[in-house]
Length: 266
Image (cartoon, rainbow, N blue to C red):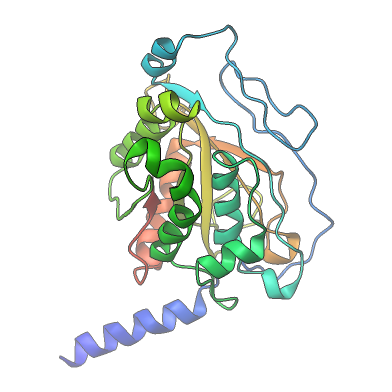
């Protein structure tokens, strides 16, 4: 019993010590940038959106069958670069996700309020699921018969890839809404590009993937980054990394943030 108490105490201490999307280094303003796709989708069109199109006009059937690569149009968002918003990565990632579905995305404060975001520690996976569904249900429920997103604790890379593939190539989403569904995941930032080895819990929204190589070291996902330099991020708005690198960051989250079991929202 004393060991169990000590272990529980360590988990609580770890939850306090590991920040959420917050770094200690100031840096020059973030530069915008493009996701480096490994497949034939067109990148940013200069308007602050990612303009995604296939190299030729594809039928719905062809889009559904093209399950090794897919993308959805999302908008880039920047969290305010001040101390009060240092832990708003969950709200920023939610805005990116919502931008694939809604013509008008709620402002970051409205999203944070809906997710019960704690400025000192961020927002939980469960609250994020409830928040995105609250905004999307009026649009999604009539066509899909219920809320779209649910939170899970996923423990294998294959399971993560399955959820990314099935949501971004969902026949229901494509038929009903004209686009696939982005997926949110929880990570630690230490090994992720643009974070200079700073370690914090972090939420990102994946909006594209290329699984054509059938090799985790070569297959890729593309995602949006919304934190400010004060929060520790100094990279472009969109990043593309290998599936292998994504899984390293997600496994780190599973180890270091056990108090929030939800690591995939799809």
